Length: 322
Length: 119
Ligand SMILES: [Cu+2]
Image (cartoon, rainbow over all chains, first blue to last red; front, side, top):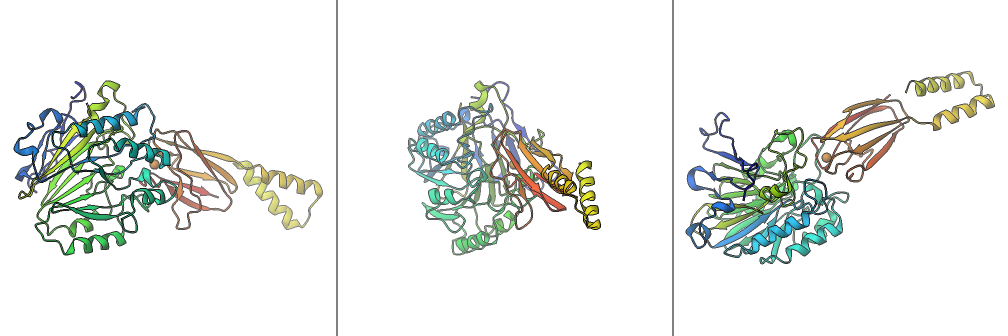
């Protein structure tokens, strides 16, 4: 449930041209209470308190999975002195979903300082989740000091060179991308030529009716470049996905939920299981936001994604940990 | 800072004259060992000061005052200097022995950039 103070939704509808171009941007940095209705029925987002009744049409589908993000295991500053506890709370939440999700995606910043014991702790906690498979992509905190060597050894066994990969689940094509390596001074997230070429090839032979889910740490759309919240060469990646009828992009990094629909693509960022960050430009820097302890869980969350075969839309449901 | 510059001038003058009295020489060595130290604070996702101008031989020490880790990495291809990740209150030092302009950034948050100008 939302805290009284933080139950706040910022609907960013006043940018010129947004409605004309047919997309709507809803943003809630307080995970709970966010309720976005997006044109064309492409994406639905509910907070826990507004979840459709168990067994209703919205909760059932061919495939459901959960996205968690930004666990930052090892972080111990005032914004959240117990990131293990809040990750466990996320797992409890996942285990309490009426239909058990088939698998989990972790969209990076698993660890805070890339320490082996931090990765160990996350893997240990996630073992108690009902879904057994976890698909990871790295955040910049997971590839510190060793250019991601440790991350790849742990989580990237079947991935390509820099950690990217794809897989199929019930007709949905999932693509995990890496945009936290080789960042350049003054720049944003980067996919790089090698990965872009791989992506082009990976989706080339898929039918245009195949639903595509892309997941990566840093948003693949320009959320707030001033804080580095975007990816330099994401336009090229999205160009390869233009032909598909349904594309969902799931990201983390910004520690708040945000959605945007643009043409065939629905962009979505997940909350952090560890600590919230300010809304774009609403603070001097994107540093951790300190909220009163009793409100913390209302700004942390998980994302439950439900795919219904025969419909183009992927329903995305955000839950807070409270 | 002013002191290092004038000592450098003195060394050149001594060389030019080709005269090295024992006293002068030991003075020169001592002076070179005594390098200046300058501080850069990393605070609120910003390097402060953003541009730091120092004489040759200066050691610059960066200290992370944020709740979030940062790095200090020189922006040139050969990565003249590159810190390990700096958690809160951790430090990184580098001694600049050659004149030049050294742009650098945080490799975790590449929007964070700074510059050391060595004269
Ligand atoms: Cu940084």
